Image 1 (spheres, helix red, strand yellow):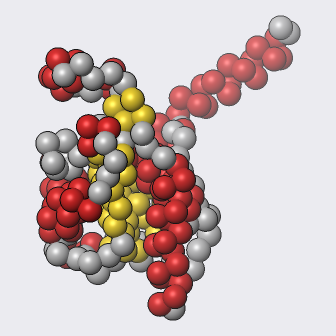
Image 2 (image 1 turned 90 degrees about the vertical axis):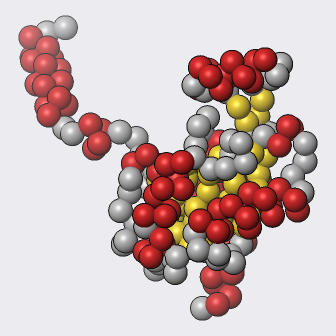
Length: 199
């Protein structure tokens, strides 16, 4: 390597240190749309994140996707979809607290709800939608009636906290993945069609 290349690399590396971490991170950039859409999710093993991204893809990629741990400001968004992974019949406490704290802002903007659950690897039926959406997520959001879906999820034991991982291992559970991209894409299309037909 010659001296000139060495100095170029050194200068570029130094500049990189001054770029804020948030700007360096890989983020999801939505496509242009007349309305601003957001998907807000809470997750443990990433299944609700992937579901949210795929829902946005089903909407032609127009929704920005946020982890509730980012504590995003959703005030500039026209429409919002909310979803979360399920443990012990509920979404994460952090997601529940965010929704409760921002209920006035969110209630009129929510256009879809989703939940992702393992369901003991059994098919999802109407009873899961009633328990996880109607009697849980929709109630936290203010008893709203919008398109909703429960997806089968996945677990990655290495991403779980020690207590949850030990519990799963005692139940002889191993890593599995039953989340279907096609189901998420279809749900995104369903939400977008409902809005398009109203316009």
